Image: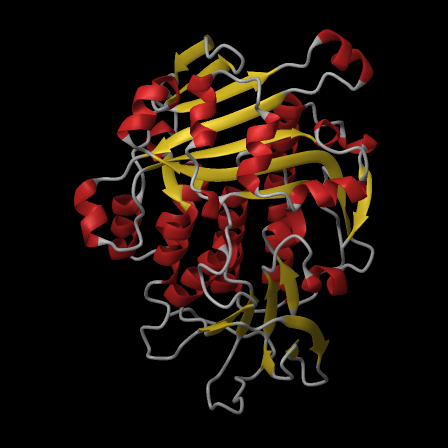
Length: 426
């Protein structure tokens, strides 16, 4: 149990009779990591999630957990939950191949050289990880996650507490409100009124394709490890429209069969894929883009890749349409903004540093946020010192992640520099 949990605020006895200290808005990876950290430290918390359930909508599939994020998870999870995390991960094969999407030929392929931290890289299904991170949070018998609760605004109270108001008319009062509510965070909008993000002019269609004998026969080159199939523009189109590459990132997710039988949340083996491109490849205006994003994902992906080789296109032909989604790519500015720290409100994850998926570090950065904030609260108590220390440290590593996402975007879909991107008000 932690010491000095609350700085200058007495325990709150709410209408339910339960003392609430930390209110977490959002049950994504960052919010759940923070919850696990608070649970281990003995700091009371409650999570409010606007979705009706954990599987209410597609939220991506395979994610790579790199060394700093895996160390964060190991720190907040009990030994039993850490073993469950490891058991429910897919098999990680370190290597990458690049292919010409038009003829299916390899243009580059290399095993990753053994190096520091390589043993700490995990491939995990996002929904499976969320299931793991929910385990044990309600050991006391209290249901600490409230689903279907849409956050509207917060109120700073005269007694030094903060009150979160929800769309259904209810509210929750506590000592600290943490906005883990995603890209268009209402917590961030109120905390930092002039906060804005950037349209980096990218579109991503992502989905999953079951691994079958037919797929293994048609697309063996895409079932070894991470592969990126690239489609460069023809000369005249490159001159007129821009040198915009279309990239298909794929990686097989193969789970250990023994654990698939033990843990019901583990899916059947599949290939994760993301088709990423510059917006102007598919749309010439914002209005047209919205129309494009409403096209069923399979139809859109098949149209974009109509000239591709069958061995590459097979991944898209055999996709499970129920898991396919298309999104506009948005990003925070390259430097996480400064604001006056408030002892009662802070933010983490996409709520403050959303980034392009091309860098592959958005989820890891959110997990690290949850760990760092939880560690500061456990060490210093809930108050200005802990919140400010977290925010200062977060700005440093999140800025590095944003720079990596830019580098990935420039490689994968010719993302423009941040200073050439249009502002989007949240």
